[in-house]
Amino acid sequence: MNDELKEILNLLEVAGWQPQLCDTPIPYYDNPVMCGQPTGIGDVVERKKRFPKEFLSMQPEFVVKVKGDSMEGANIYNGDMVKVESEATVHDSDIVLACIDGEFTLKAYCEDEDGLPWLVPQNDNYEAFALTENDNAWIVGKVTEVIKAAPRVPARTCMKLIKKAKMKEPPALTREQVEEMIVDVAPMVKNGRQWYAVFRTLVDKKYFGKADYEAFCELVASVVPKHEHLPDAGQMQRLAVQSFAKPVVLWDENDAPVTGKPFKDYRRIAEKALEQLNL
Image (cartoon, rainbow, N blue to C red; front, side, top):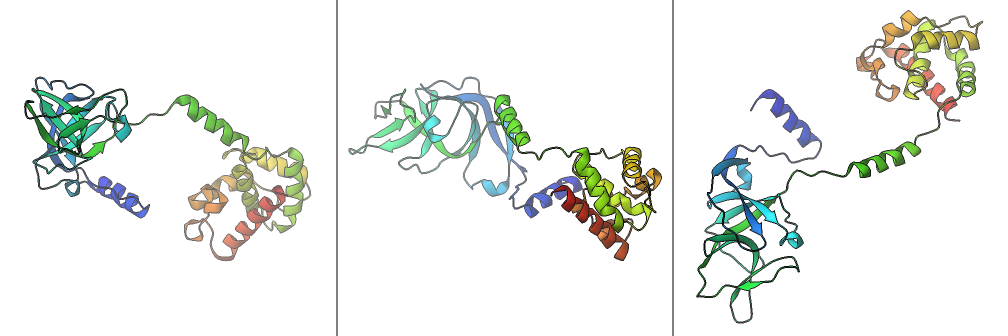
């Protein structure tokens, strides 16, 4: 296992997931098994599918692909794969892979009040059928896990939710709001570089782009032209490093171009600017 994969697994664990490495191959038969009327598997081609060893039992196991809709009531759909454990003891309500006259089918196993075994679909469009002594039938194995086909969702559903989220976005800032904020914050600014805290706040609020230093400096100069410490575009750009290149909420004194009291001053100015914009 390479270092990158180890790092991914570690991150997933930290996030509360329980990742398992698929490192153990078991047989996989690409020919589909019907969830409907029994059908032959045909010329079976065995391949290999890898699973986490923790998921595997001591009994022989293999994987087959599902075709049809008779087991949808058991949440098994066309295109899914099922892991089958052979030589397993079968009980009522277990889902099994059965072979009838050389043809294979996936069904639920159940015995009636007389002890006669039945194969029962999980879809009302299909009928259950009994396994009698005269049938050339046998239970190949018990389904121990369903492996779902890769899910997809309708694009229309995604766009509907995106539009809904956009409707909740706060209204865009007006020029008047921004100018009033600059006037209120200006007395806190004791050197030209500190205007960066105001600029970054306006970037976070999507009023300016990340590289709109010149436009910001021109705006400040037009709003408070007599301010003793007007911003300089070059200084603004040089401060956009480390955590200062990120939204204000992600600023980190241990990863910033300034530390100590200067860092606290920048944050205080940014918080004041945000407070004024949210009024």
